[in-house]
Length: 412
Ligand code: GLV
Ligand code: MN
Ligand code: MN
Image (cartoon, rainbow, N blue to C red; front, side, top):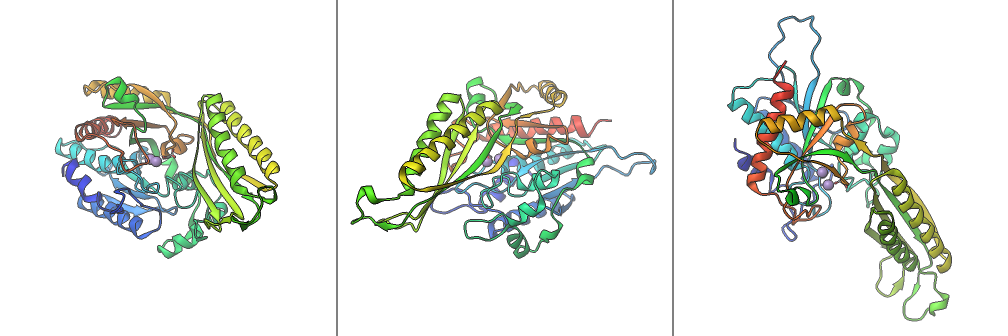
């Protein structure tokens, strides 16, 4: 099947008719539809598919039976990405890697290439952390990078726990946790992803190879004040948490500028949320990313110090907590060089780039040689319905991934 037909088959799932953005949150009906799409796509290809104990999806192209049953089984090569989205996300962030994986398998088969080791396609659960707050939750659980008890208790905005959402979707939350056998069976993981910036466009290249991921994390700042009447409460008598929150948001921008980093407050919730009432509480989520850990710490320390000062000045409380932190990831240098060389052999010039975006490949990199391919994004816009990649570049992505899989999985 062509990339275009496969792409079109997933495109309507979870798309909001009003915004054109995607709302594919884990363990929701849209997520269930994505999972069905994955299994149907795998089944049509005769791949052995299933869900692991952490809600991640796998489809395997097994190698022909090994003549000597006593011989050690060579480690698998896995590719893939994720199918969940941020609120009103774009079509490409995640799904491009999964669709391209199946299309690359189709291309290998058209060319008569057969793997000598297992070739897997993975779609990781809750990569965006859009529903339960911790990014790359499925790969973190698999790799043992988060305590299962903590994951089970994560709550969405309605108070539903990850465990309850999983149970409602028919999966057992008691089983979540590290899967060292699955990890030990993987020799390499290569994730293809839309680029979430304009570097490839500036370099006039359709495909890039990841060098490293900036350290990044999420912090929750909960300000508690006193609800009161907007039309009668004197300014001097107010304990307005919104003012302290506003100071923290501006501090984030200032700190990021000073440290050469990035900091964003993209989500704020105010209670009780009345136009004519001072808020009783305001919660803001800080997303911070920097080229190194010391600049990341610098950003967070500055923001927290200014948030505390503003809270004191406004007479409100502040409870700040870290939701997740991912240290810098340097992708496996040998695999990275091999990807660049393989692509060059296929006639594809692929510059090596760092990124500030987090990925399951970054989590798995702690335990498995991991690498990434990026597909050019002409505007660089991502986490938005405007995210886009040209069909020609997606086709080059399929060719590139097929070349990489042929090299890693189809040769002794
Ligand atoms: C994942 O897209 C991230 O937030 O970096
Ligand atoms: Mn994303
Ligand atoms: Mn992604």
